[in-house]
Length: 115
Image 1 (cartoon, rainbow, N blue to C red):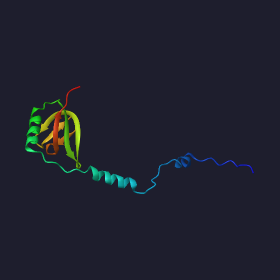
Image 2: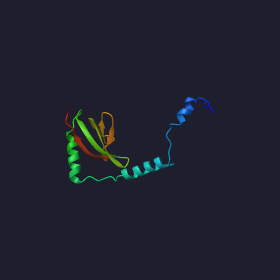
Image 3: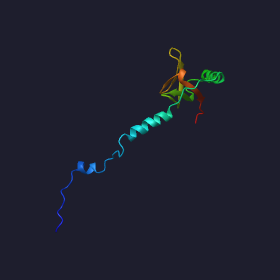
Image 4: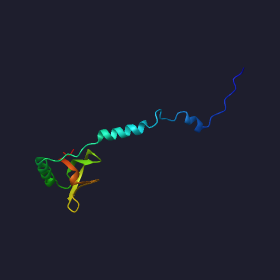
């Protein structure tokens, strides 16, 4: 018996053979939920000494200084580095080049050395 040639597959049919699939339905969502649980952090209160050191650092900043700000957002601490612009008084926040961070969320501010 001779082998009959197979009809050609359309590109879409051929691509379906290589598409990813979830072998276990809902696994990705469950992993994302578990990761969020593990990353959840309680907000820490600053000690009097830490608050005084933070106030001193904030008072010494000048526009253009490069700083690394560690702040609390979405149940975890994040650090963001940028150039300092000013501290806003009307809604107390640190204004950086690309982001504003509420002073109530700030944990530490560290002046970075220029490269």
